[in-house]
Image 1 (cartoon, helix red, strand yellow):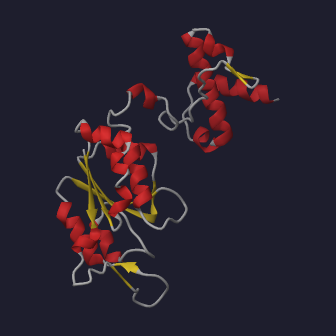
Image 2 (cartoon, one colour):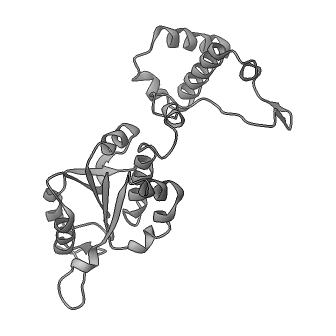
Image 3 (cartoon, helix red, strand yellow):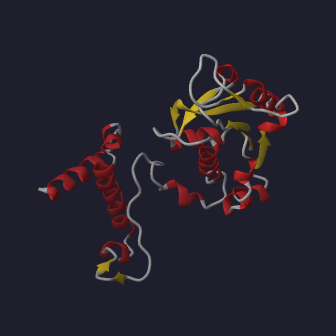
Length: 239
């Protein structure tokens, strides 16, 4: 797939492009990632991409002309255009899977106090990575790209299938050597080689962790009969 990032800070992505998974995806021709400098599309000798807001107010607003110019330089009939904005839908693992299926994803990184509202009609979707404010859309763009790259075959499929949110539950606890560390031991069930017992333990631990940390996920989940039994066991253990 192809991802185009429209930004006024292309230098933010220099090391990101060299990071292991991104470089691996590009090397295997799974990902074509291009960084577009919005400043190159600004008119006038000073190439200003921001200006003061009409009606007054603090801060500066990104101008429509450079943004739309940059967008039109890369947009095709197959492009899906995403603008990072606080009003956007919250990014999720489900959305990562949706984006992975796109032929061409365009990510627009805002800055300053916001962007000229006349840019919005040119976008297919507004996206937020959480209810907080960042200085620009570059960090959200990198987060989205990283989550997509993981799904492109850069790591083993089984490594992603049981991660948090893939099944609607948080991931179970993981352990590695040594078997005992400062009085904390690896659970005995993981050492016995009984794959069915290990599967059941992991599911129960996922349910326990999710019920404690993200009860909203449990509330919205259509539980299997096994999960209902395990949740009942967890409740009884708390008593």
